[in-house]
Image 1 (cartoon, rainbow, N blue to C red):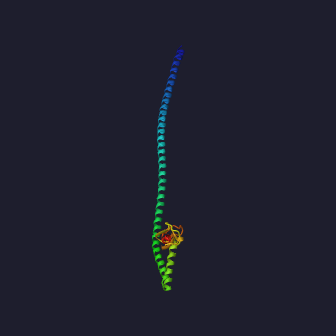
Image 2 (tube, rainbow, N blue to C red):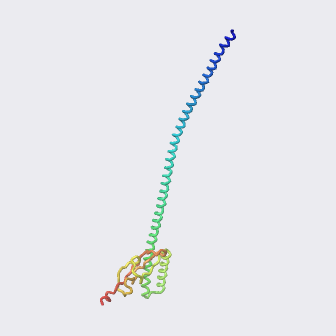
Image 3 (tube, helix red, strand yellow):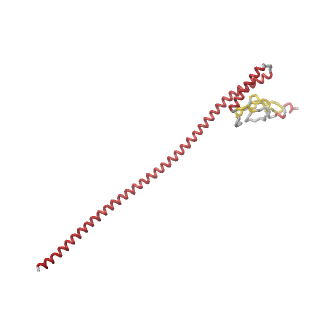
Length: 216
């Protein structure tokens, strides 16, 4: 009888022990679940922070990309401006150099005119041939120097009056065939040897209809 009573008392004690272990296990599982939920919340918060940082990085990237495009555009514009300014400066320098060359050439042309006048006078006077040949040689050297520099004397006598090439100092009565044409050259004209651009217009006398003949 005592043995049976002892057996009945042991069974409830084991049930209580099992229940205690189950409760402990349940508590442990709940604690782990709470820990996992806490970790999940922290992870979500970190993800949100990373997404915000990513958005900020994307914004900064787009800003930098836009800035880089603006800088490239500014650099292209600055390069174009610098190239254009360089071309303008080079063109101005070339024009200034050409003007300087023409100015010097025009001074030499005046000397050539004086030699030509001297030779014309010498041909009408009884000049020593040695002096005449010397004047002629000097005139030829001046003409050659001008030609080598790119300037040549152009023919005007007998040509039709052209305002782009001739400056009419006066008109003189002449035959019908010479009306409107150059009948005398007072100062020779010069043009560029390559482009035929007039460097100095010729000063000339132009023929006009003979008034006396018209009256008759």
